Length: 93
Image (cartoon, rainbow, N blue to C red; front, side, top):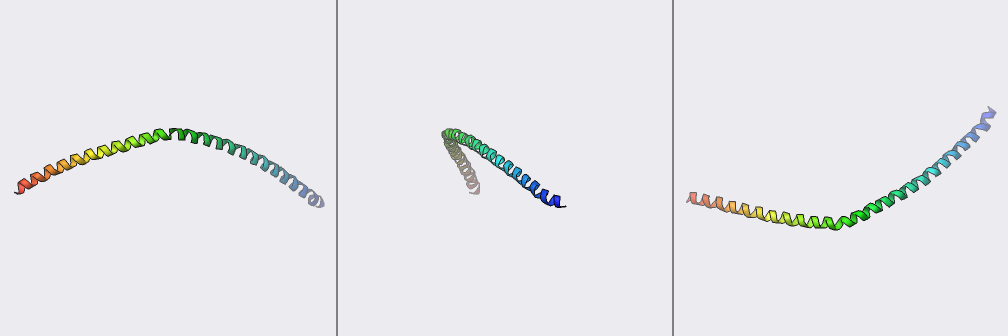
């Protein structure tokens, strides 16, 4: 029994030292991986910024096309509206 009381703390300290070393190694690898991921994200962000002007042009043209089609639909509906109400007024008179 006395042997276990002397030997058990040595095993526990040895295992704690091993876990500490493994934690340090994993922490260093994690930091290296995060640096690589940060470089990739910055590269992707730069490429997206270069396409930003292209997306702005597309957005502008779609807005103008939508405005033009809205005006055409508004004109056609007002024309139909005028034609329908003129017919109803003639029938009522």
